[in-house]
Length: 221
Image 1 (cartoon, rainbow, N blue to C red):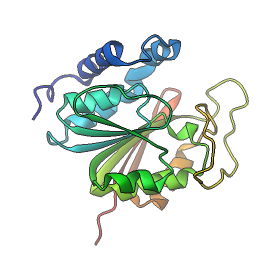
Image 2 (cartoon, one colour):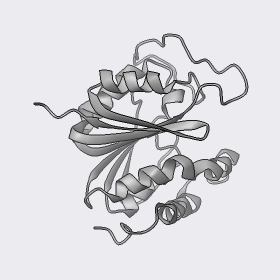
Image 3 (cartoon, rainbow, N blue to C red):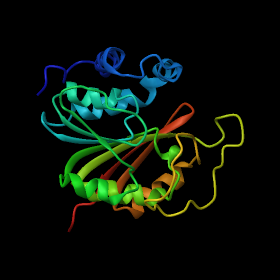
């Protein structure tokens, strides 16, 4: 096990945030300063789950953003592939930054690696095409029995006209993504997406204005 495996998740997260502060090309962004104020809510439970994995596990981080959870997994001794559409790489040993869209199946075929754990934190609300494709791609990339954890805001928590219904189009190579909130999803919406993609044992927990999910990829009978 990594020497950090028995640390409190908050301590590991602080160390990961320090890596972002030192290495990220975006460290001066106001958005990063605001994000850190709320990080613990969704990052610490995921860090705790990462601690339970055997050292050297393969972790898939969908939409890592500034890279704090990718750095957390690497600090714990895991091998991390981070699939990011908008931001440039966080340079850190153990983290491989992959440019791509989670809804594009070709991104996952290119890796040809089955992962032990997947993260999708604060990403679902940003998808501009049908999220069913993203969940199906993640499921395909995971080993049977591997877990997927993620988080997303609850509908109604943000001021303004945040859409929380409507059908998004299928992904195509020509689609233009935007780095903004596109649609918010209820826990029931997310549970249905996970179940349709082949996940089971779905657990959903409210954490203030958002919720966290954990699900396991089905093991063939």
